[in-house]
Image 1 (tube, rainbow, N blue to C red):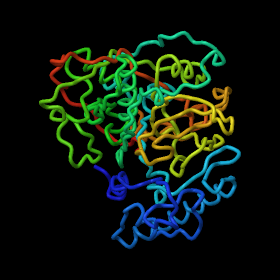
Image 2 (cartoon, rainbow, N blue to C red; image 1 turned 30 degrees about the vertical axis):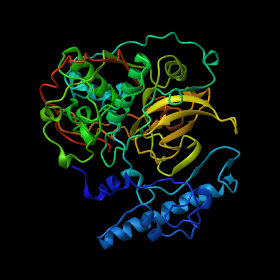
Image 3 (cartoon, helix red, strand yellow; image 1 turned 90 degrees about the horizontal axis):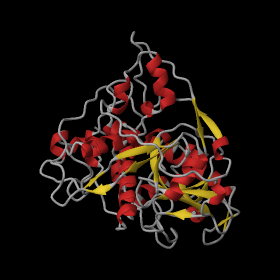
Length: 447
């Protein structure tokens, strides 16, 4: 169930986050970064984004957050040079108002569960907090080693853009207030790899059965679904269904996404009467914090799902994002679709598709600063229990888990994976749908 405080995120999913035009000429259009100043009011903001807070205390709280965030935006943009048309001069990025301007960082829609990360799970195992089979929800692993030759990055193409090649679903989704980023990233990766394998245009697959039915560890990791999980769990679940001919990925038209658990049916009923259309043979997880491996995978295999620290993404409007390594708390999963060099500024970047709707950032995308030393540009995630805060030892005491190194701006190299052997199931359907229900209990995933 979504906390009432977060319900506004679902409402904001259809609101315009960054539309063109000048606010002074059209009062119905929110101002862009170069048009924004301190005269912009909370009342104008609420009208632009179709938000309302009936409770006076909540209204006052949101107003305070808005004023604080607006000051942050204006202060940041005051250090940047922009033309009258809003073009950035000298590189970097600008911030703007959007559906998250009256939102605290902790309320941003994310959902990455750190339990499966080896650096943390191994520590929990040492303290008796869980058993190994819980890491993949009791399902056998369908993990496969990388199947490409790793070359020096200098030998790779200077630019890769799978979205530009038409191999990324053009419909950028919005996860709303549910911590379902992991299911969106996994689904997006499968869509892209299917398009690459078949030569067809991307098809729209459903995140819903993955979200609701993926087994998740029943201790020290949350309940899964809107409470968070990982891409690896999702891919392993789909591979298991495919191998057993019990399901796979379904069309979004047959199984639409529902961001509020209040409307959910039982897991077994999610795909009742529907036929799966796509299966996978397994998944590959790259070595952590490895720039060369990540770049080779994107260039040679296709888009990859990555875990990131997105706590500072909320106000991003456009440009090449750089947080100077100030945020290393991994909390979100997205799709890395390519890399390149900005023609105007010469800045290297990663191109990332988010799941916060098409009005976030650059048409639903964010470009993150890239350097050839990214695997040495590291910080420490000193909140390892974000996402696993129920981690207890056998005596019921909380386990102290050591921080872990995360590399690249926004930790883009920390956790990288992609599906293997993506294929259409036969026209009659190789499977009758998922059998058995998800096994999980407990709570605590970052959402």
